[in-house]
Amino acid sequence: MDTNTNLVIQYAKTTQTICLCLGVAGLLIMIFILSPLNSFFMSSIIGKALILCLLVYMMYYNIQQTNQFANSFNITFLNINDNWGPIKTNVLCSYLYTVFLFFLTVSVFYA
Image (cartoon, rainbow, N blue to C red; front, top):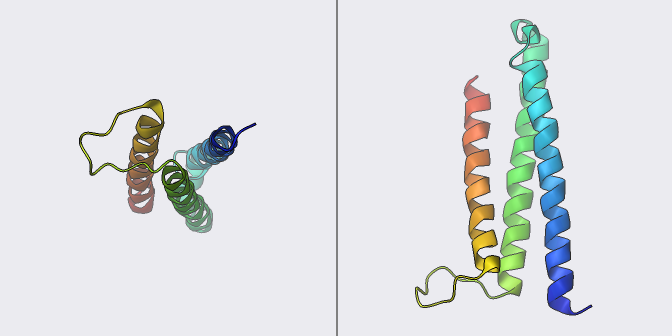
């Protein structure tokens, strides 16, 4: 396999890991924030801390892997005349995903 194919496969695996973590975070949100366990002080604090740590890790890991992937393919958003291929679109969507993770982190923090 060539280098570009290996980079895309590696990026797909990291994206899969991030989505798995989001599923776990969603399950933890349902258990510790939306359930009656929210009324218990200790479980609420421990649950929120666990969820926030997982969400912050996901944001960090997503940004790190997306930057590495974008740098490998020399993706820039500053030049308007560049071709918008599927790789550039994927990088942009990954950054938007990180923004939505940030909003989820803020909403969990204030819940």
